[in-house]
Image 1 (cartoon, helix red, strand yellow):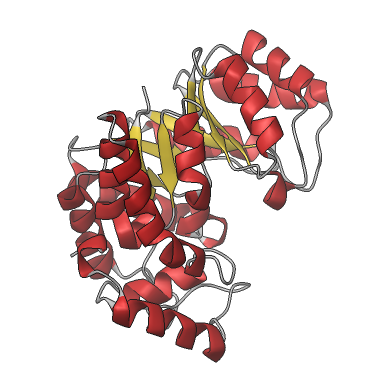
Image 2 (cartoon, rainbow, N blue to C red):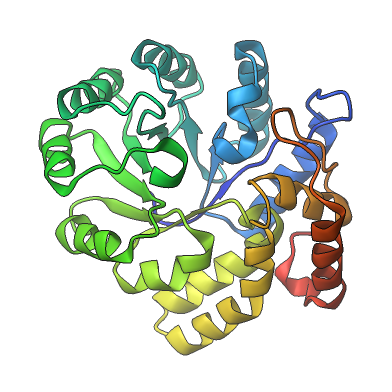
Amino acid sequence: MFKGVYTALATPMHADGGVDYDALGRLLQAQLNAGVDGLVLLGTTAEAATLSAAEKSEVLQFCMGKIQHRAKVIIGTGTNDTASTVENTRAALAFNPDGVLVVTPYYNKPNPNGLVEHYKRVAALGKPVVMYHIPGRTGLKVPASVLERLLEEVPQIAGIKESDYDMAHVTDTAVKYAYRLDYICGNDDLFPQYLAINASGIISAAANVFAPAFVQIYKLFIQGQTKQSFELFAKLYPLIKACYLETNPTCAKYMLEKIGFGSQHVRLPLGEISAENKQKIDRLLQTADKTLFIH
């Protein structure tokens, strides 16, 4: 259902914090031109946690009007509160996405019964659910026994966006479940490893800037040209790492500004990246192969 390259779309902003719809429209078109398979709207990279309900609705209205079924759409609706997550999901359904992305609740550290019920409440609304597992941000690592229960009791979970860096866990999960649902890479810097263990694709923040490269890496791999796929990934790798010199999406938005897609502005509590990291990124961009970038 969710195969290929999905860009976790950033939200370009003006200096006053308002959404820059001109830049957003150009960014969207560049992603479609690059041939991405889908877009994740209102995810972490979109700074959804700092957008009001009205802004989220406006962003979705704008983006869906531009996408017009040319790519699949997953809308991020998860919070650390079940009622709010259900409310967000219900609002998202008005835009008829292909699925919703629901992060495991952060801060609360729900127990197994609570976690299962959380996903049941969202799944009851009828859209395929992509479970977002990112222990580094949420503080919750879902044990194998609980994941098994989740997938048994909530069959509407159609995919897992896996952003754990514990490759033993990742491999165990892929071996058990990658034939039952879409196991989606959530770590840009581990894309080849995930492809090798039967991941269906990637949800990528770095693809905001480098969508053409990610699309080609994926295509080469599924065509059996794994050596060429890895060679392209290796070429892109320093730029991927640079996207995470500071908290996502701060560095990606700085890169987007440098190539003419909006500004580096983010909303508090995120702030401007350091001068040192700007210099590191600038040096990389100056020497990088421009075919890797959106245009």
